[in-house]
Amino acid sequence: MMRTLLLAATAAAVAQGAEPPKNVLFVAVDDMRPSIGAFNFSMAHTPNMDQLAATGLVFKRAYVQYAFCAPSRNSFMSGRRPDTTRVWNFMDHFREEGVGAEWLSM
Figure (tube, rainbow, N blue to C red):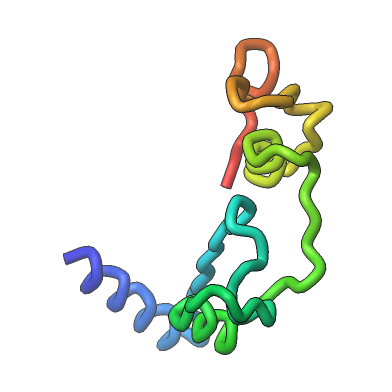
């Protein structure tokens, strides 16, 4: 049902001359590091990730805001640096009282 509605909405947008909606897939691999074939790492067998990388956009120079994954993810998802989100460890999150209860995230 949902697929039919999406297809109908896309067809209607195209018929009106509007651009069809963009498809975005974001894969966060901060814990995995660039240890896949797409980054010339031969010790791991990652054919699906390699195929996805070959047909999509790969960021070869991406950096994180903090050395731990939780502060870095909170920073990325909120668009704010860790000193603003006040997330420094694995226990906190930016929805803590007095921090970012009203912030939008991806």
